[in-house]
Image 1 (tube, helix red, strand yellow):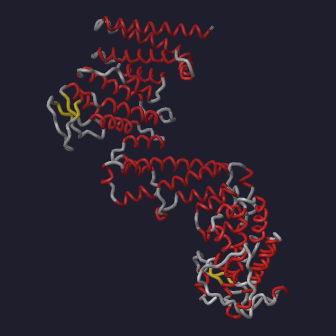
Image 2 (cartoon, helix red, strand yellow):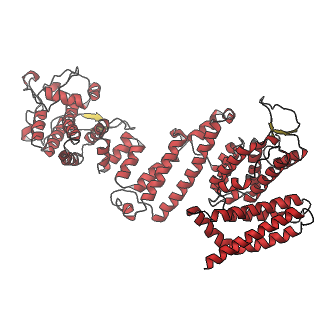
Image 3 (tube, helix red, strand yellow):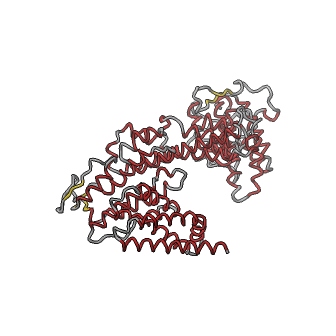
Length: 593
């Protein structure tokens, strides 16, 4: 080859193999004959023996130290086989007998060949030996699609090739398999040298993870992905990629709970697998990281899709987008200051932080966000909204008393409370938050007593001032949010008990007892429905009937104290509770039969 050493290193193996066949290389001819005989072991042996005797020195790209893998001494090996005599030095390339077979490649590139004696570059010669082997290996791999019987030849060829002690050859072999689309074949090779190549040369953590998974080294796969997902911001990994890494880590550690997989590689790797208890602890830690990372991703999405994006400086944006932040930082530096109240509640739920005062503040802010700023013609509405607003993070929002149209700072008209445009949005938000937060083991972030009281208050005050009051929507909203009937009865009873000493507003008391009766009626109706849903309600009703009967007696006694206020409404409500009581007793008797 009339090429410098650096240029020779850049010639592809396919071109080198084509040149060897076109020049009538004895090695190429020998390999062709051996392949005709399906002697793949002979092909590997002859190619690697020849490569050893060419000597030379090749650098291994990707090795940070800049070191090289030395070959044999510059001279021919003293252990040369008899058949190798005359193989390495040809007197004239023009006299070489050409191979012209359908199974040989033909060179189409403009590479100058001068395959004579001392002119043959040692580096190029070694690479040509590899190239001939790679050519037939690649041909076999490609043929397995149509000829499945060739799979055993591929396995035999690779098993011998990977036993080589020639580090240069192994590096080139693995690189060639990867570059020619045979990555799955490469990852199935069960040899530490592949792991070393993936770590030090290829340096693709995804491929190394796949290698560990293929060979059931699950704890090593988990460790790799955990370190990557939790790594420093300098890794330049997007948050979604970090979440994917952590998810892979959790799955890999879960798979390694199989004791056999933990012990399988104990004698083949220098590091000791973790114990079962350690693995379980790792899984818990990783899942906690995943929960916080997903919240971080939601915070990031919420910020970028809103006007808050302008409030986030470049440094904070980078931190939020390319690293995992502590949950306290997520709350104090991002979610709370930017008014992401729903996500603040999710953070409290994830951390199991039962800070009731802050949680109530967040709920006040959520309700106010749907209501304010607004205008109203009623002083009573203003007082009620001011009461809700007090203690929220929206105390500066305006509540204007006027019958005239008023524009806000953004230029639009202020919402009129009496129109009730806020009802659909507030229902949707409560339902969404209920489905996310309630019944997940941290119900303190969905304070049902407070929410029910505020929704009922809004409904009542709107009913007083609206010319077209909406039908009662509060109870259906909470039911759709996933709140159970027992929890609803308990919440509304707690509201009554909390205000039992306040008899100054009999209208409010009647409304509260009416709500309880509505809950019980809906519960009875749900229990009468056929199917799984009805069966669940019936089982709950049967379990709670004794305590409900006692509570109904208490409700009727409390209502009797209001008979002097509005005897007809009170009597109707007492009669309603009596009907409910009768239904409960009838159901109880049926269950006893």
